[in-house]
Length: 206
Image 1 (spheres, rainbow, N blue to C red):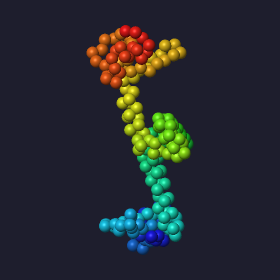
Image 2: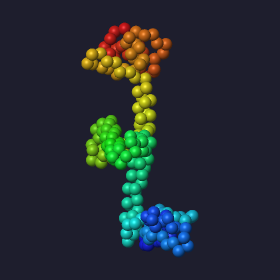
Image 3: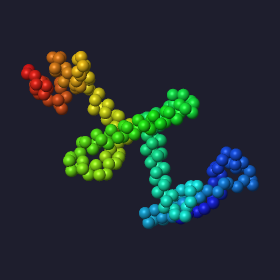
Image 4: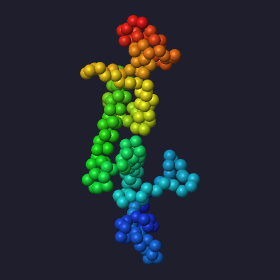
């Protein structure tokens, strides 16, 4: 249900107006509201949800749908950007530095999400992949945020090393590299198999 021109919200408005909120004759600036009287066809037991807005409320569902995008911005961009991406750590406290930092951070967040979606799509079976191409969405990430994704990458790669030889390089599990360089190991991770299996994977004989 839409309600127009509420004046009971003292904190809404410009500072020049709200600074007089403690006066007896103070009247708040008008703001519209959408009151949710039923949720999932049930009346709330204790009060209900009210959406405040300066937009028209002739169609309350428009305000409700718009709020969904606000939650996407708040949870998917602000909270995600503030912690894993250090959105609030500006290089300098100037307007130009803040603007550049925010734009650059959002750009890198977008590139990272695009890469993760491509990676998740590439891991699908052929029939699933064709379906995903028609409806590519963050559902492919299965709710895994940036922080958990980085933690998973650390766990998956913490025992790996990069070895450079001239212009060539190779990525090895640390235990694999030990076998290849004839360093003695008491025990190998079960996923790598036996020392003989490690050598065979690289086309070497014991």
